[in-house]
Length: 124
Image (cartoon, rainbow, N blue to C red; front, top):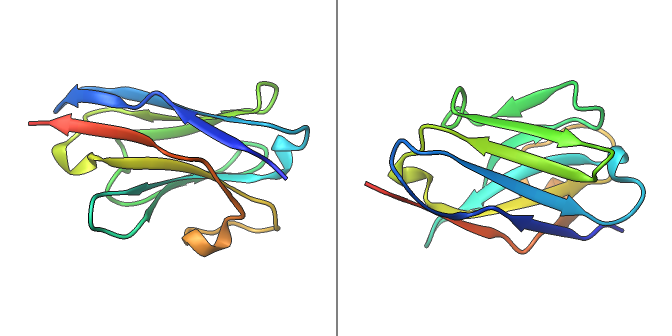
């Protein structure tokens, strides 16, 4: 089992940047596919990005491609989401998630563990 704790959210102006971090407990962090999801008020939680266990492969939602970068440091048990050129529509609660089973997925039900979320608010 793994516990996830996000940090780094906040209020930023449109066009600005933030870096989110997600610290994981446990000694098997490198065995998890790690993903970031977000949920805006009144909307469903949606996929943002994932990174494979070695960090060799990343995948992004079209809405963030070219602006967001996911990365991980397996030695520090941490996954990051660098967010540039932020837009008001990026405003949401951002969650990191871990998938224990093999393979890669973009749906929420495919992930086994979730953090509590960190709020990102982008003002226009």
